[in-house]
Image (cartoon, rainbow, N blue to C red):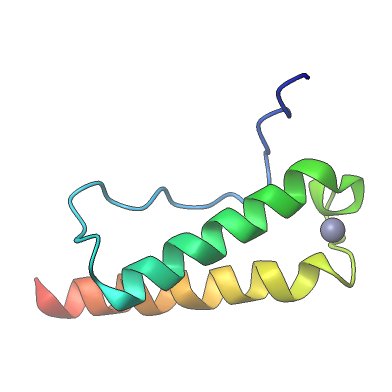
Length: 77
Ligand SMILES: [Zn+2]
């Protein structure tokens, strides 16, 4: 078994470590991040600049949740 290579795409902002693990939005954000990067690590298309049909919704979901999460963070502080 060999480790999958680290994925250059979709350039995510690493979730802040201080975020609460019980935060529902954070949990969904993390899940989307995981799904998206796991898919990318095994999908040559998504490692380029043209995501495949399967990966596209995963990356889109991640992007949306990340935006929602970051928007909420900036409102709170
Ligand atoms: Zn893909």
